[in-house]
Length: 338
Image (tube, rainbow, N blue to C red):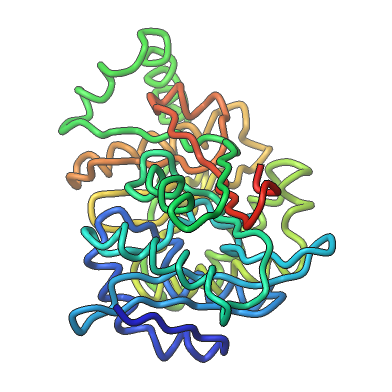
C-alpha cells in the first residue's frame, strides 16, 4: 500500500476523479465526504496545515482521510475538519480495506518522520460505521491510547416500501396528528410544493430564499448565519445543485414561501440537512407538512433511508426516526487521550 500526503488546496481538484470513484465504491459514504463539500469548507474556514492523506493499492485509491494540523492550548492536534457544519466525518475507505488503512495511518503517525502531534481527533464518527469498532484495537497495537466520547445522535428513519406502511410505523397519536396537519394545510387552498434539484436560472433566488427563511426561523439560526457562513452555503449549495446531490424544497401558501428544506440525495438515501420557516404561517405547520411530502416522495422513489442528521429534536422521533449515536474519537501518544 502506498500512502501519500497532500498539503495544497489544489489537491482537492487533482484528486477529484479518483476521489469520486472511491465514493462510488463506498456504500456508506455520505455527501459530506465529497471533495466539493470539504474543499468549499476549507476555502471559507480552513486554518492550520492541510493534510489530505490518501492510500492506494492495486492501482486505485482505497482510502482517504482529510485532516488538518493545528496548535491548540499548547498541543499539536491532527483532526478531521469542518465538524461544526459537517454531520458525518467518517474516513472514506473502500469496503474490505478498513483495517489496512487504519493501521497504515497509525503506523505513519508513530514513525519518526511523522509531523509533530499530540492528539488525533476524529470528529462525528457514526457508531454504526464499520470503522468505529476498529480504532481501539488498532491504536493499542501501535502503542497509542484511545478514548471515544459520545457527542450527540443522528436520528435515522428506515423507509418501508409504501406510504401506508410508513404511516402504520408511527405511534397512533403521531399518525393522527400528521394526517390532521396535512389536511388542515391543504384545506387552505392555494398550496403547492416543489423541488429544485439542478443549477439554473432559478438557483440563485432559491438559495437566497432558503437562507432568508432559515434566518427567520429563530434567533439561533439567524446568529449562526453570519456573513462567512452564508458565503459558504451559497457556494456549496450551488455546487451541490450543479453536481446533482443537493436539493432545495419549498412549500408555498398563496404564492408565498412558508417552509423550506435543504437536503442531499445519493443512491438509496436522503440526508435532511437544514430548514427554514416563515413565522407568518407557523400555525399551519408548513414545515411538518413539507417534510411529510419529502418522506412520501422518497418512499415512492424507492429510497431506503431518510437520515435526519445531527440533533435530538422531538419532531424527528414523531416521524418515526431511530437514534444512531455520533462519537468523537481521541487517539494520543499518552494518557492525554482519556
